[in-house]
Length: 127
Image (cartoon, rainbow, N blue to C red; front, side, top):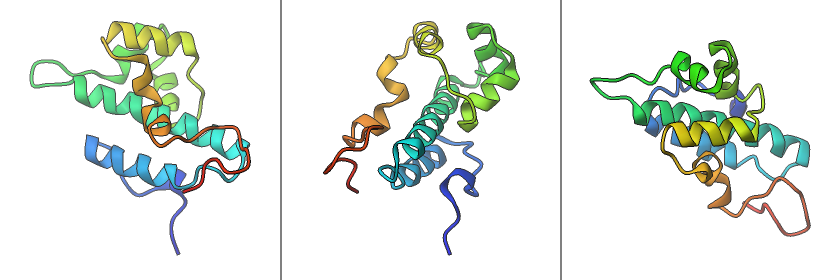
């Protein structure tokens, strides 16, 4: 029996683990619009986590606290964003993209590159 996607065993501490988790999440797209919204938030949150890892190096660590300062939210809110529990507002995503010099599309690119949509229409979101 497979484990639910939203509760996988990966710690998502590396870009590869995050990409693996995202690919598994995308397999669940298309069941319902409500489910797609939950999965969308999960992917965006994982992309924020991936951004933190990618922007960190031996001289600088992009922490949840640093992200929270950029967005003027608590680090607990950033934790909830990364876990997909809370929706990140578009203005906060735009602000984060500007402050980290990242394309805004980065946050949902795993979804759009596969041609997936939140809205369910006949023939879309086929895996």
